[in-house]
Image 1 (cartoon, rainbow, N blue to C red):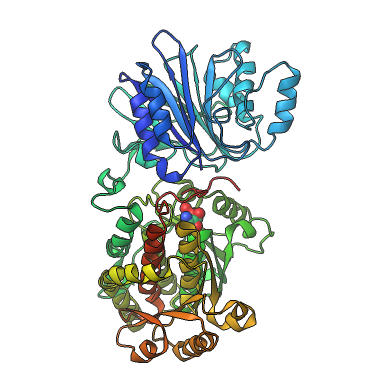
Image 2 (image 1 turned 60 degrees about the vertical axis):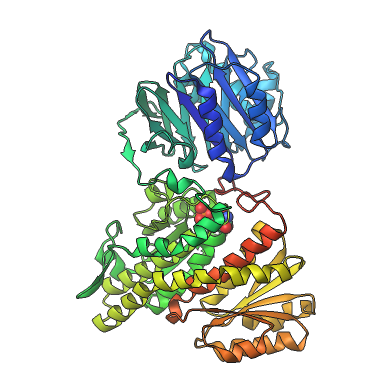
Length: 614
Ligand code: AGP
């Protein structure tokens, strides 16, 4: 969604803001803008619709020396992409500017009230009400921080706000209301930064404070003070995050997505590292946050997530049942949160979220918490809101993922879910030493097998030549490879804009089979497993209707080679862990098809890396 950046210090703010916005480009956006307070107190605002280049060209014509400013990339919710609707937004008197991420749910009501008081609106956005409300509160003698606190009490919905006033030109005020994306404060030497996402901060600092729901930060060059909306002070100290700048650059790769696919062996290895013991076999999860008694009392696990993280949750369900022996289900977090779920203290909620900031997943977690359920997050972003809401967390340790299409964090999440299932089984006494030893030895083989699967890059690239012009795709799989089929379809539609559907292979006969003809490529995930014969039968059904079969099978499988039009063979892996290798050719296929179609792989249209609105 929207990207936010702020700077206060002794350097010129504008180049730092623009560089930060460039690092937020991966989020995807439709317009961008910056505001700088010049040394004489003048407020300069530059905005432009479209690519950041346009804004940079515009700013290049000005001499902006001011050492305090804010910048924003917009992902339109209220009002089309236009210069007027781009942030920052200015009040009527030209004193205050605001940038914003999230939705002011009661903006119409507030707008009518402000219009009646004589405020003049220049945009169609919900954001603009915030700056007019601030304008109303300031003359009452309130400082900007108090004014922001007052506004927080009047707006409904989840949002992050950053404001600057030329009347208090030494400070930025940032606030977080609810779960609409993070605000992170970065500490430099004699200068301070803020941003919605870490890549914008990493060139400057790794010393960070993450704002929580209801927090306000007042930031000057010398540091920051923190308080709650009700005025109570907070004593936050910066923490050091493990991410580095190199991880946030493309290196020699053409796209972040390809780099991140190639990093998957390390993602799996790093997620396992230090968490498995072999003599005696055991899993150690330090931040699990729930007691053995709670684990033993569990009667059910519900896994929630969105998009790719939901696919991880689906695979996790299998692990919870097959490894830990606990009845489990998965749910789309945006459905879970509104269906009055019947969960309680004996239901473990496992929330999967790469960013830890997806608004639906956070809302699902809050709902579960209200109902007394213990809560564990599977998350990649240290310090994110999901990790703070949850009782415990299993981090996926994949480093920063910049490509909008998730790849390595999915493999990280699957690995973390497997470890969690082993841990729950161990604490419940459901796994004996021999079974645990087998499970952990299986997992230990995976980084190498994932590395071997990466050799399929070239073969998938060749296949992409043949299929790049297809209009539709079908993906079929069974068991753990059903979520893999869904993920294969999601990756393809996200980055190549080809219509694609994923189905459990057994479901094909119940409708999708009507779509099959010689134009329809059908990707069938058919490794050697307990349902292999059944999946072979599905391949025959596709062939009988002239569908073109691309089969993902196990190395050495000659039967499959004889039956499919194209075969991609992945290394043989333990059955429960097969998704870690079967996913890889599907990622490559989507990637190469998108490249051949000339699509913007890392920033697909309409998509945002972190979805902070409902
Ligand atoms: C994945 O390729 C997508 N970009 C998207 O489905 C993503 O997985 C989803 O928005 C959930 O994000 P999260 O893991 O950060 O919660």
